[in-house]
Length: 377
Image (tube, rainbow, N blue to C red; front, top):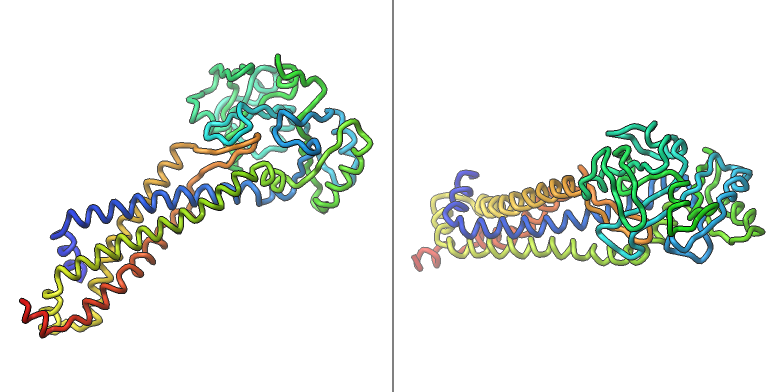
């Protein structure tokens, strides 16, 4: 049966090639949309997002507008349930949505090493900790900007020497550049001595994040700057609220791609059956049962869709792995990263769409009126 189907597809190879190409392009877009949605989910859920708090200035959004006293960290440490506090100065080249956003996080080097889920793949922690004008660069940023250890990187008023390249189990971390806190505070033009953008709070294992957040805001209420404390995932979702709505709309683009593949493969298979209606009549005459004729058509449809879908999925996976793409706004970034889940989803969707697209033409081939078809011949 498989040999017959493959010969049939080869006889109409131009139509086969166009169909496979169309299915591949549609599944390529489907996988890219899926990677964006996965990136948003990773950013706003998980242990890092649920068990850490961000203390930010009240009614502020872009990092450049939040200015908290650095000494708030001592008062936050006194709150029950707080394990560690890391003051962070954030600088970004663009508060608006961008595909090439650069985000600097300034913090104490020893705290970065012990509290952040980062691992150096090149360079050394000692150089980063001993020289104030050095930075460790996330793998995705280094890939996009062509940076390596020892390079000098400048953007705006900031110029740093790359002391290391790091990877992380949290994909969004790989789109950050870490410097020492003092470097960003005293950089010309920032005027942030004694001030930070936010405080990141690590909780003890038995602490309730929402209760601790309320206590922190209550403790700091008497301070010179009012604060809003939220879970890290909720904070990032709020920061990226406009992008969240856009990504939610893009979800429908994924469904449209699936519908396009369904329509394309179904149309091609129907045309194939109509071109060979007499051939199916002859097959039934020599003893091929209707169910077997249906299986022939379904196999043709599934092969077209599966080949195109798998090719599109693999190309999308390779592009995501090589590109290090990310989109960000207001200092938060969403990383586009391939995953086994995405690869499996693309393959399964291709298989199911191939089956669905072949049902109608398969029924047509199985119910062809033998006498009428042979008389036309």
